[in-house]
Structure formats: structure tokens, C-alpha cells
Image 1 (tube, helix red, strand yellow):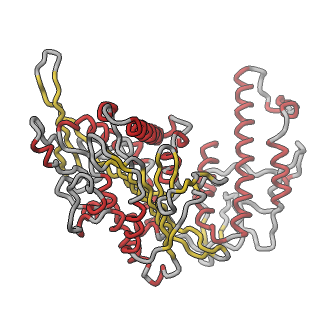
Image 2: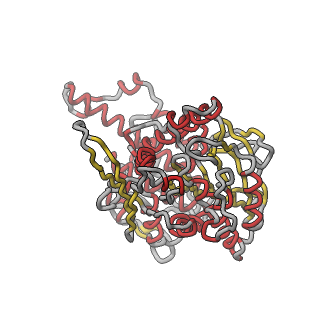
Length: 527
């Protein structure tokens, strides 16, 4: 989002608008004209192009930004998804104006809007209106809404709705981020929510810098939690909508004449934003980085679920200043944002890595996927009487382990009109009645014995029976075969546990189908 030039910037000598936004149907481009001086002291203007999902000029309102970029997140929150919206940019680029609205900023600079414009109420309030409108629908009558507001200041989390009391950011055994000590207040309307936000915003840390008279000195995080009763569990969190107003990045030259406290605040802000940049870079490189540094700062720990959560959806709003003086800041902000979702700066097409890993693409595929008929009461991957793993090298014909599944094992399996699996002649998956029982504990014990067998026991296997000479190639082939069989046995154990768990709780049938498809793909890959 490009903000308009202020009166002081327009009157300053030598200032010019160097940002040119271009809005297309499916994406938007932004051109930055950067003045440069060559080695021979001749001056030139270098044009840098970026492409994003949406681009908004200085005449765009908060309502337009919300309608095009944020509104589509609201229905997903009622379907159990975690949605996050955060604004990023330099100090004075319009982040707080975008997130909180025209009545929540500009008081110290003397340019606060006297009359509240409905088009610039802020993304907080506009999203709250849609949330409460959907909550009033009959299918969502059992959902209650609670609000929490805290800030990240100096590496600490402070509850703005509970007298700035410190809270913690911890992860549970499942990797979910929790905030012990954070107060949650029930709300019933968007107007009530704005009253709470205004009360919390008055407790937020702000200051005056050379770039902005109303500079936010902390990261503010607003959480709207949707809760409902699920079985015996009361007030379980069903979905969450999070808004993050990041503090602006600053250069040391901009705060060189400021007090020590302001410089320390700027250093802490830049440290947290640098950690966020490292996280974005790690996610953008895909599998080239094994570890994603979420523990680099409190900010990245709080935003962890926004980036890697199973049902997370995130929108990043980059706010830039248009004047020539802030051209370097603008380029840094746009490069920072481009790493989140890289597009070709000319054609606007997504890069191959982003397109393959896009969650939106997977969601569309799931919606168009045809629904399968109802599964049989007890789906099994093999008959209980014929699938068994023993430690003895010699086994009877009925105890032989079936071969690993191949492609035709899955493509030729069908379901009849009654919802039962039908076995073909070359299919290893067979139909089992309700009375068949699989002894999963004995199967797991047997698999553990095979997987945990010592190297001495493995050496006792009669390698000569394969009629292979004692050569390095033969040893490498046998070792590779051992590793593959170990992985296959481990997959079989995971598959049996998955079947038993799903049989006990049929509500997880969608997750069962997804995991079964993943296991099948891994097995085919090993073959």
C-alpha cells in the first residue's frame, strides 16, 4: 500500500513521488524510480519492478484493501482455520492507520481525523463486522467470540487489557503456541470490540522520532478467538483471527540524535524484524534449510502458527512511503515482502517453488475432488489371518509377508454400491468382515524386534542364498535392500496403527484418507 505524501514532504525542496503502482486483474505491479549517481558523477534513474497479489495507490481506502485482500479469510475462520493479517513497513508508512483506522493515529502530529470515515475505519473493525455478522447466522449460534490484545516490547509480552501484566509464549507437546496468563474478554458486537481496542491501544508503547511523531515502539497483536462446545470439551478454540501491527523498521542514522531509550527500542525492533526476515527466507528456500529459526525472537515465536500451521492463512500488507528521501526504505520493504510470495516482476506469474507449495491450490483441489462412498465398518490393509511378521527365518505358506504394494494394487481397487471394497485378482487388499480382529500389539512387538535387531543378528542372514559374489557392489546392494525393508516395515506398523485409531474414532476419516495416501506414495517411492 502506497500512502500519500504529507504536506511537509510535498513542500520540501527536491522531493518527488518515486512510486508508480500498476493494478492488473489478477496481480499488481509497482515501479520504484531510484535516483543514482555513476562513477563519472553523471546522474541516472534506475527502475526496479515488483509484482504482488494486489497493489493499492494513495487514493485507496482501508475498505478497498479489506474487500480485496482480507475479507476472503473470514469464512475460513468459522471452518476451523487460523487466519493472520500483519502490516509491515518503515516508521511513518501508515501501518497503524491501515490496521486500526483514521481515529487511532495522528494525535501527536496534529493531523488526526476529526470525523470518522466509514471507508478508513481500519482492518480491525471491518473484519469484526463480518465476524459478528456471520456469528449471528443460525449455523454458528453455538460459537462464542473472545478478544485478546497484547504487545511485544523489549522482548517481553505485555497484556494491554490487563494493566500491562507480563505473559509468556510457550509451545505444548503438539507444537501449538499458547499464551499463559493472557486475558480473554468476551465481546458481542463490533462496536464493543472497538471500545476494548481503544482502551488497550491507550496502554501501548508509543514515542516520537525524527520520522514520525506517533511512532509505535512495540508490536501489537490482536486475537479474535472463536470457541464452541465439542462433546465434553467446553469452550474449545475452533478458529482464530489474528491482526499484527508491527513496529516500523529504523536506520541508526534516523535515531542518531534521539535519547538512549529510543535507540534501544529501535535496536530491539530491528532485531525482531531481522529474525522475521530469516524465517521468511528459510520458508522461501524450501527444503534447502532443515531448521527454521522461529526461536530467534519473541515475534517469530508468536507468528509461528501463522506461517507453518496446518490450517493457517496469512496476509501481509506492506506499507511504503512515496517520497524520494525514503526510497531506500521502500526498496527494503518491497524486497522483504517479495520473499513471502515471489512473483515474476514482469509477467506477475508465481515462481515454481511458490506454485507447488501453495495451500490455496491444494484447497481448490480438495473442493473439486469427488466425494468417496462411505467406507466399510472396518477397513484393513490385509487379512488378519494372513499378515504376520515373525522372527523365524522359516515360515509356513500362510504366514508369508505380502509383497509391497505396486501401482496396480491401488488403481484397481474399487467400491461397490453398498460401500464395500471389492478385491480384484491381482489386488493384495482384500475385504474383511467385522468379526476379524487384528492383534496390533503383537504386530508392533514383532515389527519392533525386526527394526531393533542388532547388526550381529543381521550378519547371520544367509547372504549366499542369493548367489551373489562377495564384491563391493553386492554389499552395497544388500545394504540398500536392508534399509528399504526396514523402512517398509516401519510404514506397515504406522499403517496398522492408523487403521486401528481410525476404527476407534470414525470422525477422523478425512485425516485417515490423507495419511493413507501419503503412506502409499512413500511405499511407491521406495519401490
